[in-house]
Length: 125
Image (tube, rainbow, N blue to C red; front, side, top):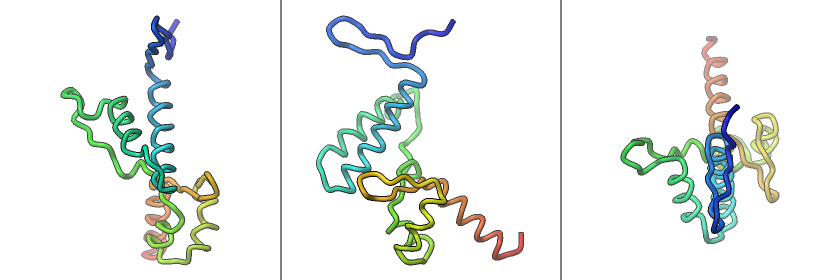
């Protein structure tokens, strides 16, 4: 039997392990991106907490936070693809984009794969 991923301790403390930590780190990433997109404070605190939870900055973990984990807006997608914002918005739906707070956010990994597919198609690979 596996250990629980969330353990409540006295005095309001909570211990997260495994999938629970990954879920909180992902949620903090979305939270920070939304704060930044909407011009609200709190993004840097969320990023610091996310880095701490993921082990970044500890001596035993040399990894740096990756910009690739942050989603792209449709405006950034349009610039990357050289198309209009409207076409980028249409494409966002097909690239596993999520509409959050009225804005489309697209995983950078999906955009990279799409660009790679476009290059392969252009060069007949």
